[in-house]
Length: 464
Length: 75
Image (cartoon, rainbow over all chains, first blue to last red):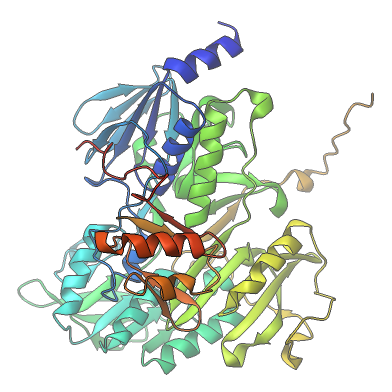
């Protein structure tokens, strides 16, 4: 069948399977239908719930403003799908184009979209992780269980890891008057994502809100009582903190185990794909019928030195799913690259934190609006003389401007005068990211891979 | 009815918090907290908030022109 005939057939009566029924999977399915896919659509999800939104779980839900089991995502349109919920995908046969399911079933596809996302990294010592009172927070069931414990009035909550989720949990606890200790291996909260300059501001926010923040320490053991409830946390500085709730907030691991042995280029860092969301096989050859989107994907980004970016960002899941879905049913000339500029938000201690670009690439930072001391500012990150990212604390309206600056490769240090700039922002300072070889709780963006610019390759287009 | 706010897009104009205060609330200077599952009787107010949002960051289903959320989820 000629390629255009095949595409016509695929769009009319092909079978598309989406593995992963969360934000990326849902938005991908909606885009397929919106762009005229009329064939059979199957949605596979390991949780027994239809797609729900996760960001509220560590914010509105813990604050009692939303119910943990009522964050289902609104649908943009009917997707007329066959839903296989509560059954995980356990294997993939690339040759036979088949997904194996945990209940023994197999589902055949003509095109596959993988959006299996990430899961919370568990406490590594299994016997300690099983203690009653030890939680992770990723799913709605996690949130419901944690909320129940918080409502019961714990004596002290201990949060392991001061990334965004850990900080949001600590914030929600403090707002309800619950005593909280937070332990972070790095020198301050959020350093993996935003660097030490901003981390110092985050540390002040924790302490001013009554968090017992311990930095530069690791948790060495969780101690249980005789009936198997957690009762204390042991730290590397030999201190012991009594706590009856422990929340393990050590970042996430990518859900790629089910692809082991499939031949796909999948591993703990995600599934490598091209900018058009097509998955690579383990030989580095791009597939044409398997697409990837969301937290589990790792794709090269032209704006950021063609580095492979893995982004655990809500907006990335939406944008990448839309691109993947479009490309799945489009001829190659009409395919689009996923060139979304990374962006995320967090809300903690009453402060709105937002970012655009890739802060961990920035060696330096300038405070271009406001001041760190006021907790209301914009910080701009620079890399090799270019503006590469920006972060705002309660100053979100500036970010769109800086996004354009990032997109056009504006010079850094920022040379133009800005409104409301204070003396501290006139010169760039070291942004103070920790050595990436020393892991913190796990960053929200991971950079990896190979840049064509490093290889000194020059592409000369033909002249006509 | 279900709703979701694209908080990358949200710039804290707080129009929704004025128009549907039982669903949307400002938390601090510019953070928004909302209930993703609003009561049916909030429908009219949510519709107004969706329309009034200066950056069009709110998606809600069950409003005119949007698909229903539960009808195709057979499980």
